[in-house]
Amino acid sequence: MSQEIMAKVEKASMKDEVPFFEIGDTVDVHCRILEGEKERIQIFNGVVLARSGSGTREMFTVRRIVQGEGVERKFPLHSPRIAKIEVKRSAVVRRAKLYYLRDRVGKATRLKERRVDRNKRGK
Image 1 (cartoon, one colour):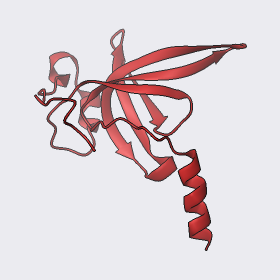
Image 2 (spheres, one colour; image 1 turned 180 degrees about the vertical axis):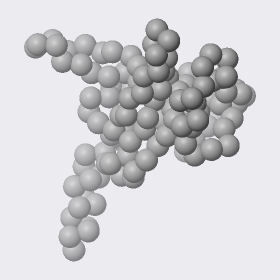
Image 3 (tube, helix red, strand yellow; image 1 turned 45 degrees about the vertical axis):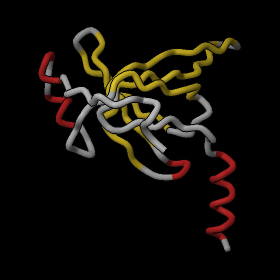
Image 4 (spheres, rainbow, N blue to C red; image 1 turned 60 degrees about the vertical axis):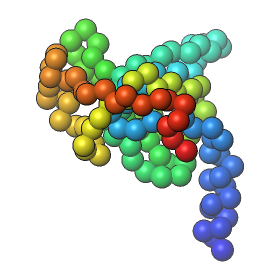
């Protein structure tokens, strides 16, 4: 009984359209940011290192290099603060988590590009 109620509550707070992306993809995450009473969109561009959780608790980690320093940010997938997610590149990876990229610098962080038509990908 309580599981059914929880499932209905979770379903109501989930986004209808979530783009298909995988670990290793380079994505642009458009975040809504409140500054005083104004709202603006800030784009966070980077490589998806990991995905975790399920349902409304699903999270994904994006890493990028800013002025020679690695910056990682975790986003809730179904958050209303995320305006949209754009997949820029897709990469061939053989791991579920790409934490090894944290130790690498420069050209060593490159991933082999996957040549796939984006319109045919996903569900």
